Length: 182
Image (cartoon, rainbow, N blue to C red; front, side, top):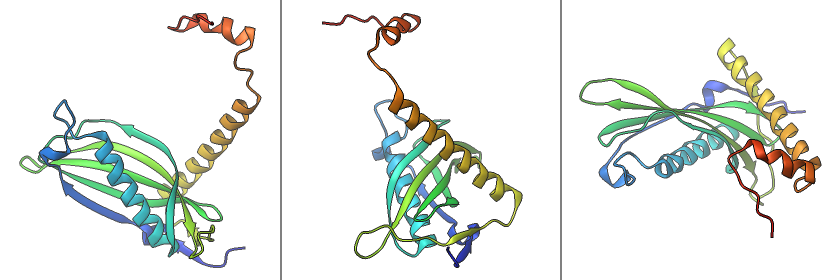
């Protein structure tokens, strides 16, 4: 059992970056792929700081793009460890964009990355336990436990699903799809 513990606060990372025209998509908003790249960077920094090891992205569990980000806005990302397993961590990230002329701040994105700690040989390395110091941290930890359980249930359901069965094909008529098997 793990005997080393660290607080959630010890994992906090904040980065800010001014959004430039070179970061835009074809509609003139900041490209979601660019934001994903920044999210992966902060998740890595947060997980590595907490674990003391090199970390890799195991999965991007949730990325909710809530509001578009404009050129000229200051984007701030705040990350913390919300959950720890044996060698894995779930990193919660909040993205806010500030109009630096008006001072208006909007919540643009919430994301959850699962990161895995690696040793020098590239094998999974144990991470410290997590000290929860307030109800918000307890709530975030419990939400991660629920998300892990739901993920396992989805994987199980996929493993027993009978895709391609007559019943499954016939049930598709309730969707906006046409089945034309060859």
